[in-house]
Image 1 (cartoon, one colour):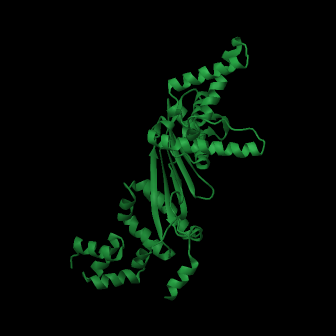
Image 2: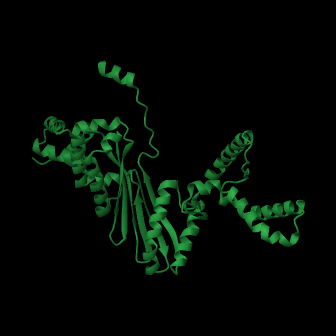
Image 3: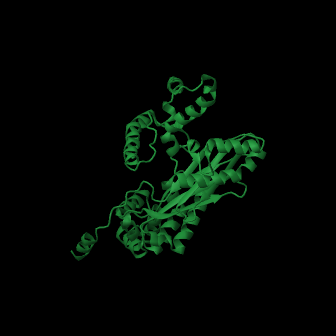
Length: 349
């Protein structure tokens, strides 16, 4: 008996099982919906689908990088418990998923799960016996003059890949080691965007007052402890430091030097450093969230952008980071607190 798309859709709606599994059991059951449902239950597929209301916030990240550094993929697969993440079967599932995404390049998670691999994934999940789902993934590619590399943290919960556009193939090849170091920096420092230029003006405005108040509160505690106070900024991002703002800052610095009776002939040696300090104090959002504007962990005197530029210059070329993807397991997922008493009561009811 031929199985219709409507039947497959109906069975999927009733059981939440993958499309290909629905079609397979309907063929075996000659279109009998009840029998097909029982087949899904017997194989544990419908049971796995019933776990959809649970929160999967644990899990692992995976990474695949081409031997020639032309392409790299990162994936995040979530589980309900950290215990399952230690399971060898689950760890192999991460590797297989990363390789599938790398090779097949599905458009999104839905496309991945609708592919033949989706059925294989569901079968393995059923055997493991816990709600497991692919949450997200990303891939970057590189041409001859683009450097690419990545890093996965030792706990396999954070994976990073990034690219940098270079002036030549030679520079791109030489920058791969540097990019791995920058990927490690990215893993630790948690940037959310590439540059301060990516921030929405409304977001910057909404963050400004709160962040300045935090510094004021910190100063209250520092004053109590009789420790040096932090400079209280007027701004939090380079996007706010217009030419007019910087010109006024320089005017204020000169006025302060005059008030301190500093000889005017040495002002030109003091002003650049004072202006740099002003910029540093007034770009805290950038240093926290924008990768290129963060202080580089391997040389905190430089930003990441400056460190990459310096490394490329030493190779005789130029390089600029253009993209990065950072996945951290469970990031942004609100995991409900377990109510043990309520759970026992529910099971006894």
